Image (cartoon, rainbow, N blue to C red; front, side, top):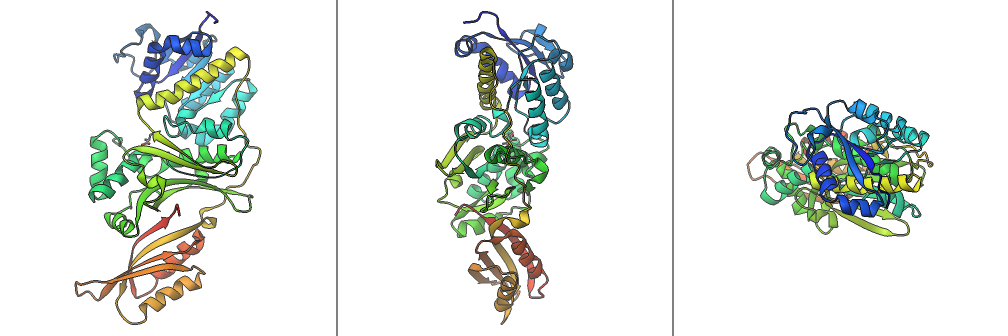
Length: 432
Ligand code: HSE
C-alpha cells in the first residue's frame, strides 16, 4: 500500500458534507485498504466557519473555496454545495489544477454536464456523480458501466422523495395537498421553500441526467417536460383508487419506437397498484430500467438524506482514488448518439379525464365526438349523476394510448363545449 495519502478537498459541510467527513474519518482504514492508499481530508470549504463541526479539525476549515481547489496538492475535490455558481467555476478550477471531482450537484450536471465532462477530459481527470441522482441508490454507475453493453429503451422512476412522501400521505390518509405538504415540512422531508421538489425541478434535473446516460446522448434540464404535484387533489387520488391505481410523480425517459429520438418528462401519473412503483412508500425512490438484453431492472432505496447520499459520494471517491493510483480515468461522457429530444406533444400516453357535464340527452355523444375528432380512442367511461339537484353529472373518461398533443387538444376542445361545465382533473396513466 502507498503510504503517501491522497488529499481530498471537501466543498460544503452541510447535511451531506458532514456525513462524508464523518465516514472518511471513521472508516479511514477500510477506505485506505480498498483504495490502496490512505485518503486524507486536506481542507473543508464552508460559508459559516464559526459553526461547530464535530470530528473535523478546525484547522481544515476555510471560507476560501477557490484557494483550496487551487492549492495544487489536492487529488480529489468533493463538491456538495449544490447550485450552478460558484460550483461550476470551482469544479472547472479543480480540473485545471489537476484534481478529479466527485459531485452531488444534479442542477449543475443537468444544466452543464457536457461542458464539465469536456473540461475533465481535457485535463485527464474524472468526473463522478452517483449522488446526483436518487441519493444512495446505485444508478449512475449501473447505467454508465454495468449496462454499457446493453441497449436501454426506457427509464421510469420515482426520483424525488419529498413528493413521494406527500403523495403517499394523500393516498393513505385522504389528506389534501397542503395538509400533506405541511406534514412533510414538519418531519423535515420538505424544505422551507419546497418549490424545487413540488414543482418537479429536482426530478427534472435527475431525468435529464438519467436520459443522457441511458441513451448516450445529451439532454439538458430545459428539454425535460415538467409538471409538479401542486395541482394534484384528493379527488384525483380517490379517482385513481377507484381505477385500482395510485398517483406518483414519475420521471420517464424513453427512446422513440423508431430509435431516432428520445423524450424526457416529469409529471404526476396514475399507475396501477400492481406496478412495483406503486408500493414505493414514504420518501423512498425507485427506478425501473428497461433494456433489450437485461429486461426490466428495478433500483430501490433512500433517495436523499445525509448518510445515504454520503454513501454514494464515498463510493465515487474510492473509484476516483483507485483510478488516480492506476494512472487512468473512468468512463467520461458517452453522448455519441446525439439523439434529438422530442417535445411532449409527440409522447404517446393515456389520459384520465374527469369532467363535470350537464346531465341531459346527447351530452355523452357530444363528448365522444370530440375524442373521435382528435383521433383519440376511448378505453372506459364512467358516469355518475349528482344527487344534489344541480342537473350535472360527473363523467370520467380513460383513453387508449395517443400522442400527448392529440390528448391535450381533446381537453381544449372539451372545455369549449357548453355542456361541459368544468374539467375537474386530467392525469396521465402510466405503467401498464
Ligand atoms: N429533495 C430531494 C428529494 C433530495 O426530496 O428527493 C435531493 O435531490
